[in-house]
Image 1 (cartoon, rainbow, N blue to C red):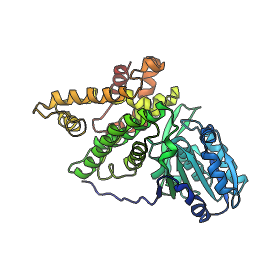
Image 2: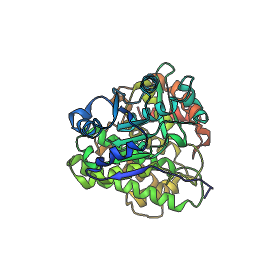
Image 3: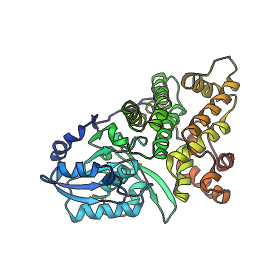
Image 4: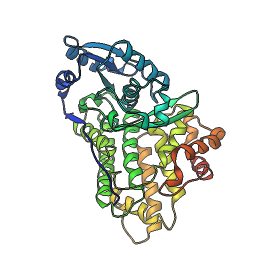
Length: 387
Protein backbone atom coordinates (compact mmCIF):
# COMPACT_ATOMS: atom_id res chain seq x y z
CA UNK A 1 0.00 0.00 0.00
CA UNK A 2 1.35 3.44 -0.95
CA UNK A 3 1.78 6.32 1.49
CA UNK A 4 -1.09 8.80 1.51
CA UNK A 5 -2.64 11.75 3.32
CA UNK A 6 -6.36 11.50 4.09
CA UNK A 7 -8.33 14.52 5.30
CA UNK A 8 -12.06 14.80 4.64
CA UNK A 9 -13.42 17.62 6.77
CA UNK A 10 -16.96 17.85 5.34
CA UNK A 11 -19.56 17.84 8.11
CA UNK A 12 -22.45 15.57 7.13
CA UNK A 13 -26.06 16.06 8.25
CA UNK A 14 -27.68 12.84 7.13
CA UNK A 15 -31.37 11.96 7.27
CA UNK A 16 -34.90 13.23 6.89
CA UNK A 17 -35.38 16.83 7.98
CA UNK A 18 -31.68 17.55 8.55
CA UNK A 19 -31.95 20.67 6.41
CA UNK A 20 -33.03 22.35 9.64
CA UNK A 21 -29.32 22.74 10.44
CA UNK A 22 -28.71 24.95 7.40
CA UNK A 23 -29.08 28.39 9.06
CA UNK A 24 -26.71 27.57 11.90
CA UNK A 25 -24.13 26.21 9.48
CA UNK A 26 -24.28 29.20 7.15
CA UNK A 27 -24.07 31.72 10.02
CA UNK A 28 -20.52 30.55 10.62
CA UNK A 29 -19.43 32.21 7.38
CA UNK A 30 -21.56 35.34 6.99
CA UNK A 31 -24.90 36.70 5.83
CA UNK A 32 -24.41 37.10 2.09
CA UNK A 33 -25.27 33.75 0.49
CA UNK A 34 -25.02 32.76 -3.15
CA UNK A 35 -27.76 30.16 -3.68
CA UNK A 36 -26.72 28.03 -6.65
CA UNK A 37 -29.01 25.53 -8.34
CA UNK A 38 -29.86 24.05 -11.73
CA UNK A 39 -32.81 24.11 -14.07
CA UNK A 40 -35.58 24.58 -11.54
CA UNK A 41 -36.55 21.07 -10.45
CA UNK A 42 -36.06 22.15 -6.82
CA UNK A 43 -38.91 24.61 -7.32
CA UNK A 44 -41.22 21.81 -8.44
CA UNK A 45 -40.38 19.42 -5.62
CA UNK A 46 -40.50 21.99 -2.82
CA UNK A 47 -36.83 22.07 -1.83
CA UNK A 48 -36.40 25.63 -3.08
CA UNK A 49 -39.25 26.84 -0.87
CA UNK A 50 -37.78 25.03 2.14
CA UNK A 51 -34.40 26.66 1.63
CA UNK A 52 -35.86 30.13 1.18
CA UNK A 53 -38.07 29.75 4.27
CA UNK A 54 -34.99 28.89 6.32
CA UNK A 55 -32.81 31.68 4.95
CA UNK A 56 -34.99 34.63 3.97
CA UNK A 57 -35.24 36.24 7.41
CA UNK A 58 -31.57 36.08 8.40
CA UNK A 59 -29.55 36.10 5.18
CA UNK A 60 -29.12 38.15 2.05
CA UNK A 61 -29.74 35.54 -0.64
CA UNK A 62 -28.51 36.00 -4.21
CA UNK A 63 -29.74 33.37 -6.65
CA UNK A 64 -27.41 31.71 -9.15
CA UNK A 65 -29.69 29.50 -11.24
CA UNK A 66 -29.70 27.61 -14.53
CA UNK A 67 -26.47 25.70 -13.96
CA UNK A 68 -26.52 23.12 -16.72
CA UNK A 69 -25.59 19.42 -16.68
CA UNK A 70 -21.90 19.18 -17.55
CA UNK A 71 -21.40 22.71 -16.12
CA UNK A 72 -19.73 25.14 -18.46
CA UNK A 73 -16.99 27.69 -18.07
CA UNK A 74 -19.54 30.37 -18.98
CA UNK A 75 -21.64 29.43 -15.95
CA UNK A 76 -18.56 29.60 -13.75
CA UNK A 77 -17.81 33.11 -14.98
CA UNK A 78 -21.41 34.14 -14.36
CA UNK A 79 -21.24 32.86 -10.80
CA UNK A 80 -17.94 34.58 -10.11
CA UNK A 81 -19.40 37.92 -11.19
CA UNK A 82 -22.37 37.46 -8.87
CA UNK A 83 -19.98 36.77 -5.98
CA UNK A 84 -17.98 39.90 -6.65
CA UNK A 85 -20.98 42.15 -7.26
CA UNK A 86 -22.73 41.04 -4.07
CA UNK A 87 -19.78 40.55 -1.69
CA UNK A 88 -20.74 36.91 -1.15
CA UNK A 89 -19.55 35.23 2.06
CA UNK A 90 -20.60 31.63 1.42
CA UNK A 91 -22.05 29.59 -1.43
CA UNK A 92 -24.96 27.22 -0.89
CA UNK A 93 -25.18 24.60 -3.65
CA UNK A 94 -28.51 22.78 -3.81
CA UNK A 95 -28.47 20.06 -6.43
CA UNK A 96 -26.47 17.18 -7.81
CA UNK A 97 -22.93 16.94 -9.05
CA UNK A 98 -23.23 19.52 -11.80
CA UNK A 99 -24.40 22.25 -9.43
CA UNK A 100 -21.83 21.36 -6.79
CA UNK A 101 -19.01 21.11 -9.34
CA UNK A 102 -19.82 24.51 -10.79
CA UNK A 103 -20.02 25.95 -7.28
CA UNK A 104 -16.53 24.70 -6.43
CA UNK A 105 -15.09 26.36 -9.52
CA UNK A 106 -16.89 29.61 -8.71
CA UNK A 107 -15.69 29.52 -5.10
CA UNK A 108 -12.07 29.22 -6.23
CA UNK A 109 -12.26 31.63 -9.16
CA UNK A 110 -13.74 34.32 -6.94
CA UNK A 111 -10.23 35.01 -5.68
CA UNK A 112 -8.43 34.58 -8.97
CA UNK A 113 -7.96 37.60 -11.24
CA UNK A 114 -7.30 35.67 -14.43
CA UNK A 115 -9.44 33.38 -16.57
CA UNK A 116 -11.11 30.70 -14.39
CA UNK A 117 -10.06 28.13 -16.98
CA UNK A 118 -6.48 28.63 -15.75
CA UNK A 119 -7.54 26.94 -12.51
CA UNK A 120 -8.91 23.95 -14.40
CA UNK A 121 -5.69 23.55 -16.35
CA UNK A 122 -3.55 23.96 -13.22
CA UNK A 123 -5.25 23.45 -9.86
CA UNK A 124 -2.05 24.45 -8.09
CA UNK A 125 -3.14 28.03 -8.75
CA UNK A 126 -6.10 27.55 -6.39
CA UNK A 127 -4.99 29.06 -3.09
CA UNK A 128 -8.25 30.33 -1.61
CA UNK A 129 -11.97 29.68 -2.04
CA UNK A 130 -15.26 30.82 -0.62
CA UNK A 131 -16.73 28.34 1.87
CA UNK A 132 -19.18 25.89 0.29
CA UNK A 133 -22.22 24.24 1.85
CA UNK A 134 -24.27 21.74 -0.14
CA UNK A 135 -27.71 20.14 -0.08
CA UNK A 136 -27.70 16.96 -2.12
CA UNK A 137 -30.58 16.24 -4.52
CA UNK A 138 -29.00 13.47 -6.60
CA UNK A 139 -26.76 10.60 -5.57
CA UNK A 140 -23.88 9.50 -7.76
CA UNK A 141 -21.15 12.05 -8.27
CA UNK A 142 -19.79 12.15 -4.73
CA UNK A 143 -19.04 15.85 -5.18
CA UNK A 144 -20.70 16.59 -1.85
CA UNK A 145 -17.78 15.07 0.06
CA UNK A 146 -14.66 15.74 -2.00
CA UNK A 147 -12.68 18.60 -3.44
CA UNK A 148 -12.96 17.77 -7.13
CA UNK A 149 -15.11 19.18 -9.88
CA UNK A 150 -15.35 18.80 -13.64
CA UNK A 151 -15.90 21.80 -15.91
CA UNK A 152 -16.61 21.95 -19.65
CA UNK A 153 -15.02 24.51 -21.95
CA UNK A 154 -17.41 24.53 -24.89
CA UNK A 155 -15.16 26.67 -27.09
CA UNK A 156 -12.24 24.25 -26.77
CA UNK A 157 -14.45 21.14 -26.50
CA UNK A 158 -12.69 20.09 -23.31
CA UNK A 159 -14.11 18.60 -20.12
CA UNK A 160 -11.50 18.52 -17.37
CA UNK A 161 -11.25 18.09 -13.64
CA UNK A 162 -10.00 20.58 -11.06
CA UNK A 163 -9.87 20.88 -7.30
CA UNK A 164 -7.88 21.75 -4.20
CA UNK A 165 -8.26 21.18 -0.46
CA UNK A 166 -10.03 24.55 -0.13
CA UNK A 167 -12.79 23.53 -2.56
CA UNK A 168 -14.07 20.70 -0.38
CA UNK A 169 -17.55 21.48 0.99
CA UNK A 170 -17.57 22.57 4.61
CA UNK A 171 -20.89 20.84 5.26
CA UNK A 172 -23.45 18.79 3.36
CA UNK A 173 -27.09 17.96 4.02
CA UNK A 174 -28.06 14.53 2.71
CA UNK A 175 -31.81 13.95 3.04
CA UNK A 176 -32.77 10.73 1.23
CA UNK A 177 -36.32 12.02 0.75
CA UNK A 178 -34.92 14.72 -1.55
CA UNK A 179 -34.10 11.95 -4.02
CA UNK A 180 -37.68 10.68 -4.28
CA UNK A 181 -38.57 12.80 -7.32
CA UNK A 182 -35.50 11.99 -9.40
CA UNK A 183 -36.36 10.82 -12.93
CA UNK A 184 -35.58 7.09 -13.38
CA UNK A 185 -32.71 7.76 -15.77
CA UNK A 186 -31.03 10.09 -13.27
CA UNK A 187 -31.35 7.46 -10.56
CA UNK A 188 -29.84 4.86 -12.90
CA UNK A 189 -27.05 7.14 -14.12
CA UNK A 190 -26.17 8.07 -10.55
CA UNK A 191 -25.96 4.41 -9.59
CA UNK A 192 -23.54 3.75 -12.45
CA UNK A 193 -21.47 6.79 -11.51
CA UNK A 194 -21.10 5.50 -7.95
CA UNK A 195 -20.00 2.08 -9.20
CA UNK A 196 -17.60 3.67 -11.66
CA UNK A 197 -15.84 5.68 -8.96
CA UNK A 198 -14.96 2.66 -6.88
CA UNK A 199 -14.29 0.56 -9.97
CA UNK A 200 -11.68 3.05 -11.17
CA UNK A 201 -9.93 2.83 -7.80
CA UNK A 202 -10.34 -0.96 -7.69
CA UNK A 203 -8.35 -1.11 -10.92
CA UNK A 204 -5.62 1.32 -9.92
CA UNK A 205 -2.10 0.06 -9.51
CA UNK A 206 -0.89 -1.03 -6.10
CA UNK A 207 -0.32 -4.11 -4.01
CA UNK A 208 -1.88 -5.06 -0.69
CA UNK A 209 -4.54 -2.33 -0.63
CA UNK A 210 -6.89 -5.03 0.63
CA UNK A 211 -9.13 -2.85 2.78
CA UNK A 212 -9.61 -0.30 0.01
CA UNK A 213 -10.74 -3.01 -2.40
CA UNK A 214 -13.10 -4.51 0.19
CA UNK A 215 -14.73 -1.11 0.76
CA UNK A 216 -15.05 -0.72 -3.01
CA UNK A 217 -16.71 -4.12 -3.29
CA UNK A 218 -19.14 -3.21 -0.48
CA UNK A 219 -20.13 -0.01 -2.28
CA UNK A 220 -20.78 -1.89 -5.51
CA UNK A 221 -22.80 -4.58 -3.73
CA UNK A 222 -24.87 -1.84 -2.09
CA UNK A 223 -25.66 -0.17 -5.41
CA UNK A 224 -26.53 -3.48 -7.07
CA UNK A 225 -28.95 -4.24 -4.21
CA UNK A 226 -30.63 -0.87 -3.86
CA UNK A 227 -30.68 0.77 -7.32
CA UNK A 228 -33.38 -1.62 -8.61
CA UNK A 229 -35.42 -1.00 -5.45
CA UNK A 230 -35.23 2.77 -5.91
CA UNK A 231 -36.34 2.42 -9.54
CA UNK A 232 -39.20 0.15 -8.57
CA UNK A 233 -40.32 2.35 -5.67
CA UNK A 234 -38.93 5.91 -5.89
CA UNK A 235 -39.96 6.58 -2.27
CA UNK A 236 -38.12 3.58 -0.83
CA UNK A 237 -36.28 5.36 2.00
CA UNK A 238 -33.73 2.63 2.70
CA UNK A 239 -32.84 2.40 -0.96
CA UNK A 240 -32.39 6.15 -1.32
CA UNK A 241 -30.43 6.36 1.92
CA UNK A 242 -28.02 3.59 1.02
CA UNK A 243 -27.49 4.92 -2.51
CA UNK A 244 -26.81 8.41 -1.17
CA UNK A 245 -24.28 7.28 1.42
CA UNK A 246 -22.64 4.90 -1.06
CA UNK A 247 -22.21 7.85 -3.43
CA UNK A 248 -20.44 9.91 -0.78
CA UNK A 249 -18.15 7.10 0.35
CA UNK A 250 -17.25 6.11 -3.20
CA UNK A 251 -15.28 9.26 -3.95
CA UNK A 252 -14.10 10.75 -0.66
CA UNK A 253 -10.72 9.01 -0.84
CA UNK A 254 -11.48 5.86 1.12
CA UNK A 255 -11.03 3.53 -1.85
CA UNK A 256 -8.51 5.48 -3.91
CA UNK A 257 -5.84 6.46 -1.41
CA UNK A 258 -2.95 4.04 -1.09
CA UNK A 259 -3.03 3.13 -4.78
CA UNK A 260 -1.40 4.90 -7.70
CA UNK A 261 -2.09 5.51 -11.37
CA UNK A 262 -4.64 7.21 -13.57
CA UNK A 263 -8.31 6.43 -13.97
CA UNK A 264 -9.20 4.97 -17.36
CA UNK A 265 -12.92 5.12 -18.12
CA UNK A 266 -13.64 8.61 -16.81
CA UNK A 267 -11.14 10.25 -19.12
CA UNK A 268 -12.57 8.36 -22.08
CA UNK A 269 -16.14 9.29 -21.12
CA UNK A 270 -15.37 12.96 -20.52
CA UNK A 271 -14.68 13.28 -24.22
CA UNK A 272 -18.10 11.83 -25.06
CA UNK A 273 -19.95 14.23 -22.80
CA UNK A 274 -17.79 17.17 -23.89
CA UNK A 275 -18.60 16.65 -27.56
CA UNK A 276 -22.13 15.29 -27.26
CA UNK A 277 -23.37 16.60 -23.86
CA UNK A 278 -24.13 13.01 -22.90
CA UNK A 279 -25.25 12.22 -19.34
CA UNK A 280 -22.05 11.17 -17.59
CA UNK A 281 -23.43 8.01 -15.98
CA UNK A 282 -24.92 6.84 -19.26
CA UNK A 283 -21.57 7.24 -20.99
CA UNK A 284 -19.83 5.32 -18.22
CA UNK A 285 -22.31 2.45 -18.45
CA UNK A 286 -21.67 2.13 -22.16
CA UNK A 287 -17.89 2.29 -21.78
CA UNK A 288 -17.13 0.16 -18.72
CA UNK A 289 -17.94 -3.26 -20.26
CA UNK A 290 -16.06 -2.34 -23.44
CA UNK A 291 -13.03 -1.20 -21.45
CA UNK A 292 -13.03 -4.42 -19.42
CA UNK A 293 -13.21 -6.47 -22.64
CA UNK A 294 -10.33 -4.50 -24.09
CA UNK A 295 -8.00 -4.92 -21.10
CA UNK A 296 -8.85 -8.57 -20.45
CA UNK A 297 -5.71 -10.69 -20.65
CA UNK A 298 -3.88 -13.37 -18.71
CA UNK A 299 -2.47 -10.57 -16.55
CA UNK A 300 -5.82 -8.97 -15.68
CA UNK A 301 -8.16 -11.97 -15.66
CA UNK A 302 -7.67 -12.75 -11.97
CA UNK A 303 -8.55 -9.22 -10.84
CA UNK A 304 -11.63 -9.07 -13.04
CA UNK A 305 -12.67 -12.55 -11.91
CA UNK A 306 -12.28 -11.51 -8.27
CA UNK A 307 -14.67 -8.63 -8.94
CA UNK A 308 -17.21 -11.07 -10.35
CA UNK A 309 -16.87 -13.58 -7.52
CA UNK A 310 -17.04 -11.03 -4.70
CA UNK A 311 -19.55 -8.55 -6.15
CA UNK A 312 -21.73 -10.51 -8.58
CA UNK A 313 -21.52 -13.74 -6.60
CA UNK A 314 -20.19 -15.78 -9.51
CA UNK A 315 -18.93 -19.26 -8.67
CA UNK A 316 -15.19 -19.76 -8.44
CA UNK A 317 -14.44 -22.76 -10.60
CA UNK A 318 -10.75 -21.99 -10.89
CA UNK A 319 -10.93 -20.82 -14.52
CA UNK A 320 -10.07 -17.15 -14.08
CA UNK A 321 -10.43 -16.25 -17.76
CA UNK A 322 -13.90 -17.77 -17.99
CA UNK A 323 -15.00 -16.10 -14.76
CA UNK A 324 -13.61 -12.77 -15.92
CA UNK A 325 -15.67 -12.99 -19.11
CA UNK A 326 -18.75 -13.82 -17.05
CA UNK A 327 -18.02 -10.79 -14.86
CA UNK A 328 -18.08 -8.46 -17.83
CA UNK A 329 -21.40 -9.93 -18.97
CA UNK A 330 -22.81 -9.53 -15.45
CA UNK A 331 -21.74 -5.88 -15.31
CA UNK A 332 -23.27 -5.09 -18.69
CA UNK A 333 -26.46 -6.98 -17.81
CA UNK A 334 -26.84 -5.03 -14.57
CA UNK A 335 -26.41 -1.66 -16.26
CA UNK A 336 -28.94 -2.63 -18.95
CA UNK A 337 -31.41 -3.75 -16.26
CA UNK A 338 -31.46 -0.15 -15.00
CA UNK A 339 -32.88 0.99 -18.33
CA UNK A 340 -29.69 2.57 -19.63
CA UNK A 341 -28.95 2.48 -23.38
CA UNK A 342 -25.87 0.35 -23.81
CA UNK A 343 -24.66 1.32 -27.29
CA UNK A 344 -23.36 4.65 -28.59
CA UNK A 345 -25.70 4.31 -31.57
CA UNK A 346 -28.65 4.37 -29.15
CA UNK A 347 -27.66 7.85 -27.96
CA UNK A 348 -26.94 9.19 -31.44
CA UNK A 349 -23.14 8.97 -31.40
CA UNK A 350 -21.28 7.78 -34.50
CA UNK A 351 -17.58 7.10 -35.09
CA UNK A 352 -17.08 10.56 -36.62
CA UNK A 353 -15.08 11.94 -33.68
CA UNK A 354 -13.51 8.77 -32.27
CA UNK A 355 -10.00 9.78 -33.35
CA UNK A 356 -10.00 13.29 -31.88
CA UNK A 357 -11.75 12.14 -28.69
CA UNK A 358 -9.25 9.34 -28.22
CA UNK A 359 -6.33 11.69 -28.75
CA UNK A 360 -7.63 14.10 -26.09
CA UNK A 361 -8.47 11.32 -23.64
CA UNK A 362 -4.89 10.06 -23.75
CA UNK A 363 -3.41 13.57 -23.59
CA UNK A 364 -5.45 14.90 -20.68
CA UNK A 365 -6.18 11.64 -18.86
CA UNK A 366 -2.57 10.48 -18.43
CA UNK A 367 -3.71 7.08 -19.66
CA UNK A 368 -0.16 5.84 -20.00
CA UNK A 369 -0.28 5.58 -16.19
CA UNK A 370 -3.54 3.61 -16.07
CA UNK A 371 -3.97 0.09 -14.67
CA UNK A 372 -3.47 -1.10 -18.24
CA UNK A 373 -1.73 1.73 -20.13
CA UNK A 374 -3.80 2.96 -23.08
CA UNK A 375 -2.76 4.60 -26.33
CA UNK A 376 -4.89 6.56 -28.74
CA UNK A 377 -5.40 3.38 -30.77
CA UNK A 378 -6.58 1.54 -27.64
CA UNK A 379 -9.16 4.22 -26.88
CA UNK A 380 -10.43 4.22 -30.46
CA UNK A 381 -10.87 0.47 -30.19
CA UNK A 382 -12.84 0.87 -26.96
CA UNK A 383 -15.14 3.41 -28.63
CA UNK A 384 -15.57 0.99 -31.54
CA UNK A 385 -16.59 -1.78 -29.16
CA UNK A 386 -19.41 0.50 -27.98
CA UNK A 387 -20.91 1.24 -31.42
